[in-house]
Each structure stands twice: as structure tokens, then as C-alpha cells.
Length: 328
Image (tube, rainbow, N blue to C red; front, side, top):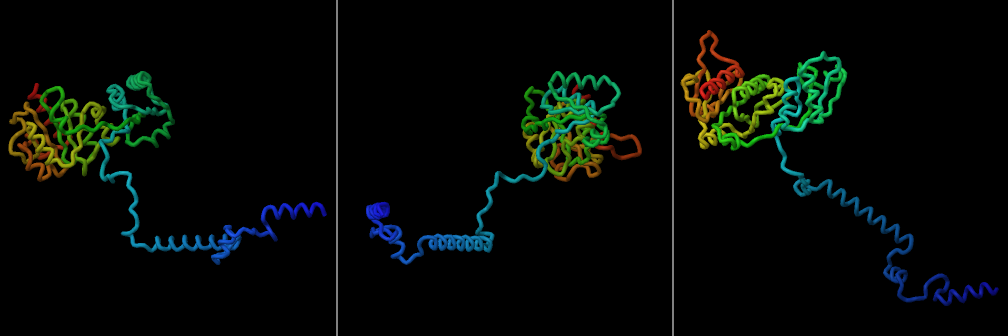
């Protein structure tokens, strides 16, 4: 009895009667006066309304015209076509040794095939790698052959940073102040030919090579192996259009000579000791029409046999060493 009396006293002190508030202005009384559902019924009604609104919004987005949908943000301009010169994979003993000797780009790792016979060039590669702190990993022959990208890697391959790409302006105006001796390749697509041309060009003293950015081979593993290390010492530039590049070279004082079997003059009759750029055409097709028109001269290599043409790599070798002969 005493306990129940004390409970009523506490309830009256809080202003409650029958479990409901006696205050006139409370959230409960305001909601009830508005006619809106209250308590659990109100919560269920609110959740149902939100779910219905979300469903209508989703259906509206699905049926909206494509033009009205917000465009997806792009992380940057989309690129097409080849990206850079390449040259990350180097295969073949001579090519890997020259890569290490040049020291112009980072070498990430060298792989050696297990079970190879001892050779001085292999000792050189191992010593150079140790000196440069390049990791060397010996793998089984089966795994090595599965990793290699060329037909005859000679049991040695390396992964390196890509070749640096140079500007055309750097090639036509060498920093050492010497007369530029440039080589331009018009649509050469065979990697073996390109590698052979680059090897000859480096040996003949070419100071820079110009390659088209599109519709031509760049520095693939086959090119790297065929070049036998020449790519480490030849500055190369990629250009969007050869006719425009020829015009820029001419404005810089470089004489542009195209090679073609139907040339107007013999190559050995031209003055090639001046700043010069030799242009070699694609296999079978030769110089493209616009490139031929832009050249200052189109020369032929004198032939004495019954065949009327040379492979592009052979023609490049003859032409490059004719320039070297005249400059010597």
C-alpha cells in the first residue's frame, strides 16, 4: 500500500496520468492533431514512403535519355596508337651486354637459362650486373624458353626501362655542335630489317633516327636483338608525319636525300658531307609519294648485277657508309 502510494506520487510529480503526458504541446500531441500516423505505425509508413520514392528514382534513371545522363569523368585524354619507342625487353647476349655497358637506363632484372656452356660474354654480363647491382635470376631452360619473346635469345634476357624518346629539334641541332647525320625510315614494318638498319647506322656514325609514330615498327624485342646494342646509343624521335618532319629539317639546314631505285642521280655523286638526312623507304613499296616529293634529292645506289633492288637493310648499309666515307 505504501509502495503504491509512493508510485502514484511520483507519477503525479512528473505530470503523467494514465501513461500519457498531460502537457498540451508535445511531439506526440502535435503529430496526433495533424492526423499523421504516430509511434510504430508512423515509422512503418515513413519507411514505406522512402522505399517507394527510391524505386521511382531508380526507374526514372533507367529510362532517362542517354543525352541527359551525366558523362563519366575521364582520367585524361584517350590515346590511340603506339606509345613510345619501346625497348623494355632486351634479349641476346650482345644486346644485354651493351645495355649494361651503356648504363643509360635502369635494368630491373636479368634472367639466365640454366645449363649454358661457359663463355666470356656471359662472364662479362654477370660481372657488369654485379657492379650495377642488377638482380640476376637463373631459371630452367623450359621456363626461360616460355618467357623469351624472340626465336634465339641465346639464354640471356633483361627487363629494363623503356628507351627515352627524343625531340626532332634535338636531332637536327646536336648539342655538340657537329653536323647532323640523320636517318629517316618511311614505313619500315619488318623488325629484323629495322634492327639491322639501326646496327649499321650506329656503326656508320648516324647521330639520330626518325621514325613515324604510326604504321611502322618500333623497338620490339626482335628489333632490340637484331640491333645488338645499337639502340642504347642512337637517339630516336617519333614524329606524327614524315612530310612535316622533312620540312622542319630543311628549315634547320639539313639536306634531305631519299633513296629509290629510280632516283635521279647516283648516291656516290652527291655531296653528303654536309648536314644530311637519308630517307629509306618501306620494304617493297619504297618511298611514299609525299615523302618523295618533299625530299631535296632522290638518289639511287649504282647496281652492277642483274637484280634491280636491294633489301632495305642492305641499302641502308651502303648509303650510311657512303656518308661516312665522304665525311672521313
